[in-house]
Figure (cartoon, protein in one colour):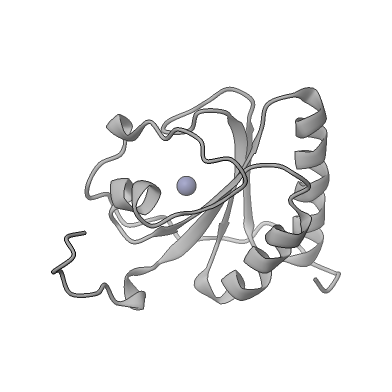
Length: 138
Ligand code: ZN
């Protein structure tokens, strides 16, 4: 975004993704623990395990999709509980390339993003249908 451009309004953010990355078997086991803990505490849509890099992602991971209302609980919880894993949190504003390259938060190592597969302007995100049944408070 050019320095002279007006600020973007928050209402552009339809939802967020957190991508939880792992490389080694030990990291995958930690990722599994974190996934269970997220499911017990937050109303989110847990995505499939991706053991191989897919799309713009440079490493195995799974995605956690969530609505803006869950951000203030989930993201600080991830700060406290990532146990050394790398996590990418990005907004979904309808601009996939910018959302991954200009607007993300990285916890831990900053990984490559294969931006060639990311369009400047994408389709609106699918509605997030939570598939967790949280029973614990964060
Ligand atoms: Zn994503």
